[in-house]
Each structure stands twice: as structure tokens, then as C-alpha cells.
Image 1 (tube, rainbow, N blue to C red):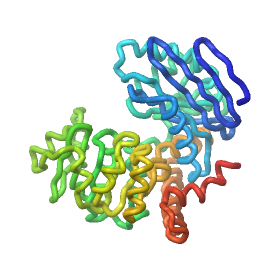
Image 2: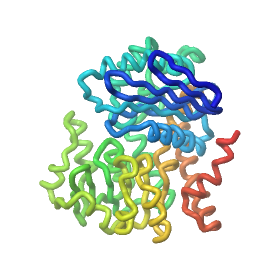
Image 3: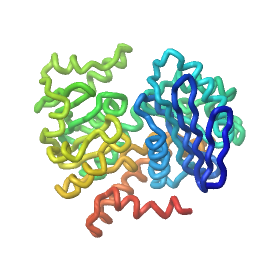
Length: 375
């Protein structure tokens, strides 16, 4: 450890390539972890969850650097988390305190985007209290860069879902007619459904935190998601049930037969015991750490390939990081062409390495891209 100090109620520790800002305000704990800098910048999401912890935020910050490694590591990885719901009654005061406690990193080298529980309004509130735009750090280098991440060129809806679908396609070939299961009915799961349907896939099962809905003939998820968006209404699983889906216990989804299972819920939500029942031919982690370590081991023993989150949930981070590093100089089409090539290369070369060395794709990825993080 190089240093340890206290700044306005925030414990700050610095160690080689990362810094940890630990803050408590209004009875709520929060952390900002910067795993590394590249060209003086780091980027990661800001998570709002009653279950978030320092260890989780640190792990996610490390994961961000791994995600960006296959994309050339345009910036370093970071992450923030606050242990409360996004609708906490004192959320504005909490964000004001965090803006003061984290002012140095947020005005010098760390940029935060959306993660679980975060909204554009919450990020806008944080940066209003910081006293500079979300992309103010980049604007000191490139004055014509926009104020906010969502205004960057190439920012499109369902980015994370798009990357997960590209990764799945790289693993199994064309998705035309492929039968999909999606664990998680939030933003990422909906994005997977929309993007996969555009490639001809059929969703045969979906689950949220409470229950699952199944249909061997296929669920018209993409149409329902798009219709809800057009109407300005939230997506409803009940609508799917009304037009032909059958309700089932939540975890029954995992035991259904399918070509691909997308994990798009929370972190470490599939246990080793649950992994014993998975019947899909391939598992794609569209969320961060969808599988526990034990579940990964079980699937490896059963010969079920897993496309890890470091690859399959990297597209949104890659898009943002490329534009942060370039000052928003990438055009949308060439940027997304580069992201897709990077994902396909990571999956394709990773599967060859995994087959040759008889290791899971996750281990192959780390062996292939670890040297990038050592530079």
C-alpha cells in the first residue's frame, strides 16, 4: 500500500494501479474503485443496490478492465456502488455527499456511467453536484465532446444485448431458428430478445425475479418489448402469458431444452446445484458474473461451453471507452464494426485455445488477453 488517508469522511487507499474511495453518508455505504488508468482515464458503471459491497465493486472494477482488454483497453476499468435503492428518500442528499467526497477522481480521471439501478436522471444529479458534465474530463482534452455518455456518437439502444448476441453468434453460428432462454427481464434481457429476434432466433422462455414464462412455440418478446416502448409503457410478462405463454417457477427456466441460455439477471445468481439442471447447448453471460465459480466448474465438467461476461457483456463499455479515448472521433458504423470484430475474435480464437488446451473459454480468454493488462 502506497498511501492511506481520510477525506471528508471518505477513506482513500491507493495501491499500485488502483484507488478505493469508501464513503458513508446518511447511513448508506458507497465505494468508488479505480482499478487502473490508461491514458489517464478510467470508466465504469455506478450501481445502486441494497446488496452491493466493497468486494463486489472491486471485483466489478477488475472485470471492467478485463472486458476492455479484448478491445485494446482504450481506458482503464473502474466501478462505483452505493448500498441503497435508487428510490431512496434521501438519494439527492446522498449523491451530493458522494460528489463532494469523490470530487478528485470524478474531475480528474474517473468517469461513471449507468449500471444496475442507475438512471440517466441519477447520473445527471451526481454530476450536477460535482459541478461539471459527465464527460467534463474528456472536454478538457477535446472541447467539442458532448456533455453526456448518452450523447456520444454510436450510443444505441440495447448495446449490451447486441454484444451478447454477437458473442452467441460467434460461438454457435447463425441464430436463425435457434431456441433461446433468457434469465432476466430487465434492460439487458430485453435487449437480448430484440437483437436476437432480428437475427431470426426464437425465445422459448423468460424469467424475472419472481417467476418464469415458457412456450415451446416461442414467445413474441421482441414485438412486445418494442410495442411497450412505443407506447411508453413498461414491458409486461403478463402480456406474454395472455397470448400463449405458460407460467412456471422461476428456476424452472434453467432446466428447459434450448440452444442458448442467456444469463441477464444479477451477479452470481446461478449456483452449482442449479447448473446441474441446465440443458442449453451454450450458456452466455450477458450479466456480470451470472454464474458462481461452482456453477462454472459444474458446466465445465458437463461439457457445456460458457461465453464469459468479459466477452459477452463488453460491447457497451467498449463503445463508450473508444469514444472517451478518442474524444468522440469515431463514426458509428466503423466503431461498431470494430467492436463486433473484437468480440468475434475473442470468441473464435478463445474457443480454439480452449479446445487445444482443454480449458474453459473463460480461462482461455484470460490467458490470451492477460498480457494486455500487464502493459
